[in-house]
Length: 240
Image 1 (cartoon, rainbow, N blue to C red):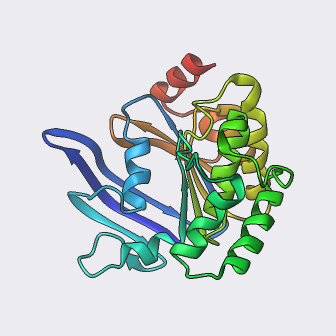
Image 2: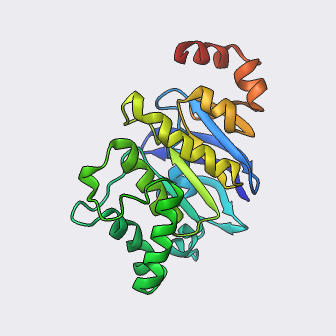
């Protein structure tokens, strides 16, 4: 599980995450919603050790992420992360992009890495794009390639940071369908998303962030369907 205990994160004098506590259980899908600047994406960076924290603890399967002796490179093999921008290597084919981490990080042979990459690209619907360069893919296809690249590391957890926000509206659905498939397969996922209907459909719980804190958390039926707090209701009205 992922355990977040009273975490504080600041950038200089700016407090961004203010005492957040959250537990994500194995096989659970938790969606984080909220306005810009509320600390959602920053929390994901802290879970993956990409940003240091100023207080509290984050544990992944009992390992404290920010402890001095933690091997972050090894820990990150458990935690796939997909950002708004996919950042592929333009001079490598789709297949070569997805093969790279299994070869360089996991030490797989070229044959093993290729088998993994083909399997994951086929899994996300890109089995016919193996020899194509990323520039020839649509935005939705590029983001699905990024998902395959994360899955190629066989992570136990997947973090999605507004994975569809940089896409044209007509391309959003294909990426959400891939994420929906992973949820149905039992992947443990933490999603920062502005796709409220999607969050309602796939999540076990939804957390509404406001001013660096979890303002309301519960089932999608409660938080999205019948919010208890006026700030949550106001936010949902603004995005709908």
